[in-house]
Length: 95
Image (cartoon, rainbow, N blue to C red; front, side):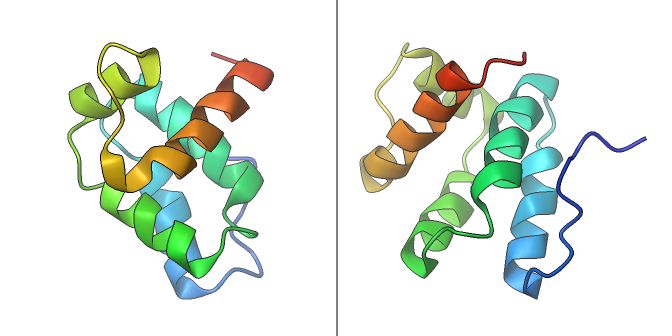
């Protein structure tokens, strides 16, 4: 059973891969936070935002979750995108 609402149909390979990686983080909490954001926005992210999201996915889940929850500051390279991810998850609660 898949949890993603976005099939990836019509996306280029890079965006499809990113969508998959957002939904397969390792912890369910981060799957839901990043996967839902990717479902809603991966098709419209600019190339530089795609690059930032790819870099974010290299970070360990505990660090990302701490940043999302406000326990630590988000990575400086991703402040703008991180703000969008947090705002999306507040506006679209579903956890």
